[in-house]
Amino acid sequence: MFSFVIFSEEPEFAAEIEKQIAASGQARAAAVISDPDQLLGALKSERPDGLFVDLGHAPHIVLDLLETLPVRLPLTLVSGPHTESSLILRAMHLGVKHFFPDELSEAELNSVLVDLVRSASPDLADSEGRVVSVMGTKGGVGATVLACQLAASLQEVGGRVALVDLNYPLGDVALHFDVDPTYTLADLARAEEELDATYLRTILKGHESGVQILAAPTLMEDAESIRSLHVERVLPILRSEFDWVIVDVSRSWNEASVQALTLSDQVLLVSLFDVPTLNHARQHKKLLEGLALNGLRTRMVGNRHSKGDAVTVSDFKRVLGSEPDALIPNDYATTAESVNQGRPIGQMARGSAIHKAYRQLAFDVYAWCGVDAPQLKPAQSIAGRFRGVFSRRS
Ligand SMILES: Nc1ncnc2c1ncn2[C@@H]1O[C@H](COP(=O)(O)OP(=O)(O)O)[C@@H](O)[C@H]1O
Ligand SMILES: [Mg+2]
Image (tube, rainbow, N blue to C red):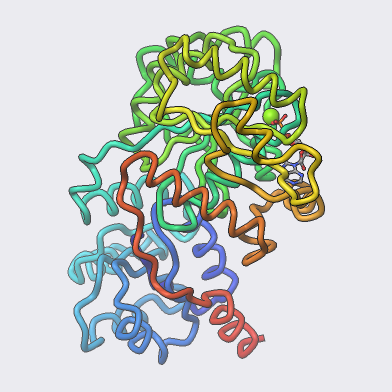
């Protein structure tokens, strides 16, 4: 994923930029620097794709610094006062790609990042993302949790992920990520002709994990305006803009969900290890066969698995014809904590068995979709480095 070194002499501003860059889902921060003397070292050690520089209270001095650095600058963005044209001219001279005002808006940053990342890796622009729908076989089996955690894990391993909530008017994807979306699917339904990638980006809500959320409307009249045609128009645009489009479909087979299912590369059917749920799973499997979604496009996930379950993996196989394609362990405490905090498990219980299972599921999904899995670099302790920078300042 596109990486940035962020420089601002004000640690809070730097942290805010770091958060916004992460929430854009387009890029990540490799290092955050508040001490000018450390900038050169960070550029040399991180070799970032991009550099974000806050010109701060002494803009000309910061520009002097950039001018005299003995390295080629990566793609550079700056923020500073827009009142002085000599500053803008100097920045342009340095090859700066975009000059943000001091009070920079999330929307402007997002659209600049999208363009920057696209232009830096043209092959990204041509590649089509995959659509993965997640469906519960019964209420409360953990489908929404799974859709959210899968989205977070795919983003964590370097994918760019959009997450669509089709459980209107009672969707809770936004809640699981603790975001308060300004817009929902209903706004898309109203957009008609204007519906394109640029418009879509303004409707999506970015979570700090980088996952971009298309929330479900909560009003009945808004919910009723959503038709299969809207899903038919939105999913291809999302597919062209993201590596992964995860859809939390409704179990009720509403027309929008059926449309999403038919456009999916993979359907993950989530079941628990109990008899009634397995029976429902069998019925859902039959219905999916009716949509020609049988065979390799449907995968069974056995959720809340534990060794002591009365119903075992072999019982699962007996009822459904094959063993689950993936297992997620039962861990109510961690799951509930993650939902309550609105933070993915990867952020609050990194390395736990359940986090590893969701991460494994992300890699399985790569394999099932025939996409090469990312080669991960050794884990970087970005958080540790932030702490180092801040504690010295405070
Ligand atoms: N792996 C798991 N272990 C323990 N509890 C889980 C797990 N996955 C989900 N849950 C719990 O199951 C409940 C229902 O989850 P939810 O995703 O809302 O279900 P659904 O969308 O299928 O109706 C939540 O209370 C959640 O915390
Ligand atoms: Mg749900």
